[in-house]
Length: 251
Image (cartoon, rainbow, N blue to C red; front, side, top):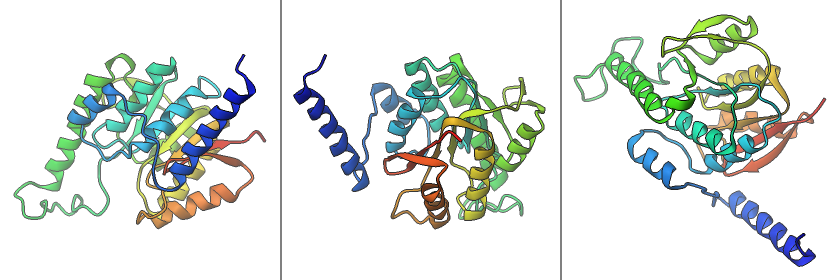
């Protein structure tokens, strides 16, 4: 058993790390595997999210599914699977993304600015890149990735529908979830709806992580939703690194 002095030293180190995180110096637990994946896999992941992934996946309340809203080229998906492997989590992983991108000219058939490449071609390339990246790095725990918006995904989840994923496999939706990573449309309307949908199915003790919720970022709608969650009596904030990880309290 540790001596009181060693116990106190450990506690102080934890507090110091938390203070550094609040001051904009996130804890980065990247390992060699993360470094190599990030060399090859495009993405916009804040490395502080890895600490949140690790914490949530070490402390999952159940074997209920994990949900990722927004996948892009698969970097966060592959790193979620990495930490699932590390902690022996056998939960099914579901992801959803329509790959239609905010503020793009996809619907109007426009080209990328200054390029002969159309947004349709760009979208198809990103989706194909996601499929290839995930088949490469997460082949042993391939997620069920559904090509749809988060609203459509949760509507199907609510109805317990059977869907076809981008890998051509059928998957049954429905039931509680243990962890939700919210990284979809960053407008306030969408972020709030993503949280409400997540909250409906999140098991007590389950986690929700809001990407791009850190102070100083231009995503004020996400920050307002996070402030509301933080002020509620239903959730406790367990990490701010610098994005916000919450745990759902027992009712």
